[in-house]
Length: 202
Image: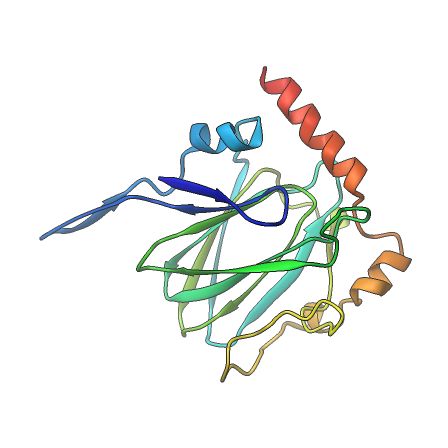
């Protein structure tokens, strides 16, 4: 398993080693101990989510209050998607920047997003099934969103895709509006939370 840091601190792309034979393929899709080597603590998987999406579906940009936040480990079980990590942490040196990773059933990569980062994806095929391992349970009062088509964020969607958004995502504020409303996590709070998780794991 190869774990590589993205340019946004707290985000990693994980590429598993696959073992194919005439029966199919086997792989380790998640290793909390290996992630701990990079995070400084072992992620506590509290909830798993599964979404099935048609081509063009855009989910996000979603994030949660910190603390406790919600770290996510995302992979594609069927189909393919472009996964977006967005730095929405006020004061971060990469605030407003994003990275995209292709998740599919060929390389079977996954993405880890630490607490405080924004997450979105765009499905490339009908029936794309994404699975999320989450470090905290869903908390409706602490969950927020940013409009995924906010031009100030500038997510680059795949060519030929017509975005399909939920009513909730289409009505979400822009990054600037979310900042003005005090919804965004701060760089300081996210780093303090990460340090506390590392302290607890010692």
